[in-house]
Image 1 (cartoon, rainbow, N blue to C red):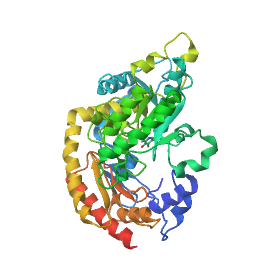
Image 2: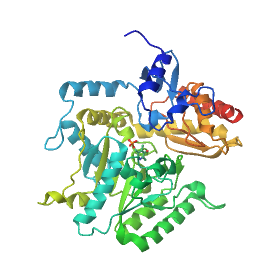
Image 3: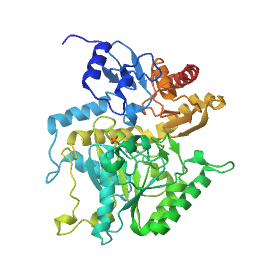
Image 4: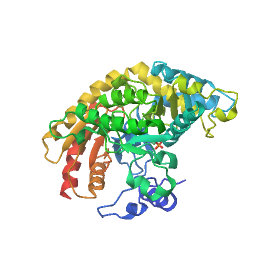
Amino acid sequence: MAHSGNADWLARSQAAVWHPCTQMRHHARSGSPEHLPLVPIARGSGAWLYDFDGKRYLDGISSWWTNLFGHANPRINSALTEQLETLEHVMLAGFTHQPVVELSERLSALTGGALGHAFYASDGASATEIALKMSCHYWRNVGRPEKDRFLCLAGSYHGETVGALAVTDMAIFRDAYAPLVRGATVVPSPDFRLGEPGETPGDVARRAAVALEQHLEAHGEATAALIVEPLIQGAAGMAMHDPEYLRLARALCDRFEVHLICDEIAVGCGRTGTFFAHEQADIRPDLMCLSKGISGGYLPLSVVLCSDTLYAAFLDDSVARAFLHSHSYTGNPLACRAALATLDIFDSDGVIAVNREKAAKIAAALAPLAANPQVRHLRQRGMIAAFDVPTDDPWFARKFYRAALAREALIRPIGNTVYLMPPYIVTDTEIALLGTAIQGALDEALSA
Ligand SMILES: *Cc1c(COP(=O)(O)O)cnc(C)c1O
């Protein structure tokens, strides 16, 4: 086929592809405030994406929080090539294979053995649904079927399939489908930005935990699980909270016999400075969801890890007491191999320690923003940095996004929150470029 440029792919994509999370009309509104440019990508290398016309973009948000070690990573590529030649796929019901066994063992070891079994799916929303179903089914199996309600935090995001929407507190994603959804109870978020004058993040966490306690005192008997995004509620706009909340929530879940589900889909795999975010609170959940970064950003893979106690309640002669859930590509060998190669890089490169230095450099690159009167709540935990921009312009995020692209940076704000979540291989020069792009894009977006 002849070489085609951006314009060609753009037109064909708009004609044939229904893009996710997008008002498709906005792609065609060139020159208007709402215009959402569609960027055709020809190839990727390291932290960079290249279009068909020779332009490049630094992937400041890890392609929707998935990519950890760069695009076309040679080590993950070679592991996948080898796996491709060996076994591309086999059903996991009644069959097993080396990558899925090794990955399950290694993930369990990463939890110190606390979560001893791994159940697989292909995306984050499915992992959420699996965790909810496992929790509810556990209570049924142990003779307490009345425990079937779920709790989530204000501003929570756990995916957009109908079951996951039940615990996703986002009107924009949920309202149109309200008749389909059996909503969970929303309890206050420990988001530190909600602090009253004089309150510390720890104070906000304790206040939110008191509300959780009050709810559980009244409704604990009917509650199956609390689901949280530990330390950072990503889609809410990188809302960060003190680990104290997780400690208190863990204790309350124990006291009221409620499962604690940690959704580490975005914050797991080293993002917040520890391999799992919940480690910073010195707790373990009963169930944990992983996806996004677990395959290095290569292949759709999600995992639900569960405690041995939970697992044991499904062992019985009766088939109906088993967890009868499945997806066609459950435990796909290629995806598991990508995850193993990703974990290998963590081990061989001392990634958690190296990221501490990179996080400090990101902090330094963004530090000048603290003096900008248009910047509020400059915050960071590990490899996620964010700030809020107090503007009433409904198209601020779009304007900023376009202005950043013009500066070779892929940075896509959530509402009025600008954030960085770069791949871990980002270099000092690239961090500096992201810092400069943010300053420039902020000025341009606010003046346009
Ligand atoms: C992205 C995300 C999900 C959903 O994952 P998908 O693969 O997009 O379905 C769930 N929870 C959190 C915290 C996420 O960031």
